[in-house]
Length: 426
Ligand SMILES: [Cu+2]
Image 1: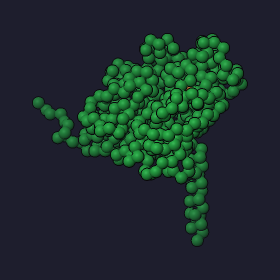
Image 2: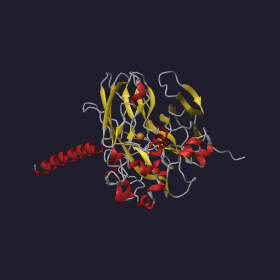
Image 3: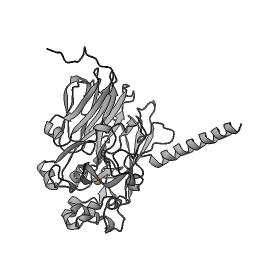
Image 4: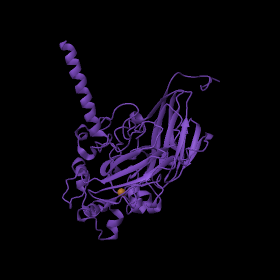
């Protein structure tokens, strides 16, 4: 009898801990009746702060609401951090709470950068709704991730990355801009307007309405702005910041995707992955170590130093590689948040079905090798592999992949299939 009691108490304790975990790490929430909660880890393991991250920062509140970005040690959103497919057959109100955060993180080992983000990662959370849903967006311009000083805020990013302190403000237009936040966002000059983030906002391409929500959601530091729209058109859409200077906000990492599933849902697949290509425009040239500052000049010249998947070099390689088994149906949600289209290709693979430009309603194109994903656009691709091994995801503008970072890995496990693919001894 005592044993049963102890087991009962244990079950209650574990249940309570799990509930607390959800409350703490939920990125975005729908109402509590909906079990397809955006922001939840739906594939693979629970969020972990251990991956490639110094252990002393994983409990900091740089991004306490994000399952991924509790650390500035890894800016990338996991490719499998996607809400579950929607199974309900009715419309409802879906509420997303997003927080904008500026965090310092690595572009590549030894190369750091101040990213501007939704919920602390690049890309931001993958939002998933159903055609006909009323979507309510709460956008909060997080006060705690500020790296500025004039507003009297303690800077988490400063304290975590001492290298930032080594630079004078006069060298750092981004930091200058922070000081404007404490004065209600009044801009005193064009430079501040260009470099600053006195406000953040969100323009979702799934919205049909002026500015896509970008006008309504202009949020100064500490503010929350809320709006609603009806997701009337199914498709795979980009969202991004639309605050002055818009290209600066986007280049710094403020983009993500929202999927509006058709009422009948999407075909069932075995694995789904979330991949967004983006450029980084740093003052220092490619591979220059240390803290890198944003270069407006290079944006104007269309000359990025880095072209990456999910925010940084190596976000989809090694321990972060996409994983699947032979014969599994794999779906890729692909997007470009920044300004240069991607020539997306999987080396050794062919898209069984390709839904270009986010059109998930029309019949797919078949047997496609490479697809162009426009700036501010998307594609949905499905593929399967009969042969195990390592497949590379690339921008087939190959210098972007091989020199600048737009390279990922998909590891397919399973039995060898020599009939399909094998070397022949001459
Ligand atoms: Cu912004």
